[in-house]
Length: 114
Image 1 (tube, one colour):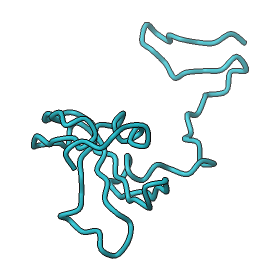
Image 2 (cartoon, one colour):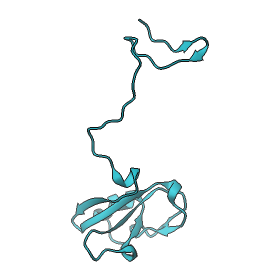
Image 3 (cartoon, rainbow, N blue to C red):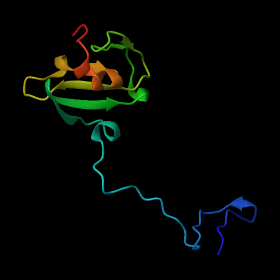
């Protein structure tokens, strides 16, 4: 059986070569990135300590921030990460907003204005 794309002039359901409808199921084997999908933080360990990191989509940003890695502005609508120390002393005042690339490269760069 050949794949059907149109039935009666209208797009139909996607069919595989066998004629059975295709199902798009999410990959349930991998661990979801909770920072991106739900707003929860993920834990990261690096030479500079233990951190809780949350990915912030651009649509959720309503303020401008200053990245401590490059000392440039993170404008409204720009996706970025928020990081704070994972120990008990890390609170709201300890959160820092970073460009994704600056956060990834923080071990190779000198600190900015932090």
